[in-house]
Length: 419
Ligand code: PLP
Image (cartoon, rainbow, N blue to C red; front, side):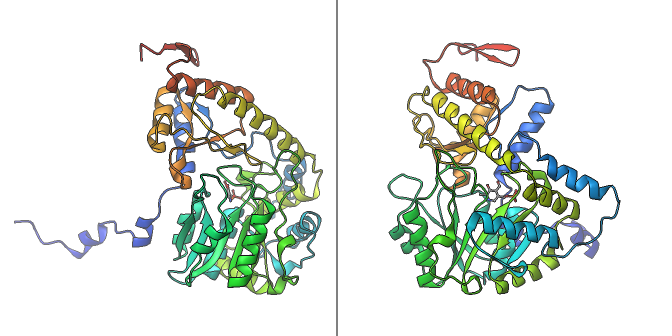
């Protein structure tokens, strides 16, 4: 007979919450770790799954933070951001959105991710719904669930990356609290057109919904496009009556992913609610990171244009290489670091395909399923052109029976028949 369980032995059993069990690991972060592990073991990995630029942080960012760090006086800072960073964000908002806002309309968070997360916590009651189009950034569904809400995905029925307004309208019901738009979009690179953004703003205003505008890649757009400015479509001219929240960060445009600084602009009431939540969660973002962000925002801005140009060139190289893959269809991305080609002619199960490419030819890709669309892979072009060319060459070797028989994986030559 088994001895009876003691209180101590019962307490030792790990018991996580229902919520914790319902949340999945971030697929992109997990892939990065797996790729790093393989690279550390000396495997010739090509990373087409990444979401951060290769270039360094702007000099002004590092110099600004270093000068203040030298004083070794790093203390708590206001929960909603330092006055200096708020001023820089106010100037950014005025310059790029034509909106004059006050410090009370700004919250600085630890990345765009936290800004969106505290926003969701600030607005959602249990079971309220948040609507967003597919493909979507991997984190939206899990973030909505973390805040007690229900994600509602709108998949364009015409096979494109932009739903119709009617499709968006059909997804809105009595439980809907907010819509999230991310343009240009991760993973597709889709820049939603003016009619669509205007239509969604209209829909939100008519139905009293919040609109979260995730502008993480707002300025990284190509082909002479002009960055989307959601305020242009609002009928409500007074920010205090507006239910729009515009989210930005230094992560992508300044290549400062590791600094973890993002921000949101909204009505005073909404920002106050978000600040209260952030004050109990993490307090203000790390002071040195905020000093660095001030340096980036107030310093010379040429790095953004340099990055944008590099990305546009890289996108062109990626599209050219993808055209050598028979049966693979790709919609030209209008911005971001990503494209989202359809590989279903080879394999419909994107997780299986992504695993296969990593194991067989050491190319990291992100399965389309993570973004709400099967049969596709997200491929990044934020690395080097050599990586893009070689990565697609390896994918071609792995999938296309008519590709040349031999392939170099680093130093090692492999032959198709021998594998
Ligand atoms: N929103 C989108 C669409 C993203 O792609 C990312 C990062 O990949 C984020 C938000 C998060 O940005 P941050 O690193 O500033 O938290």
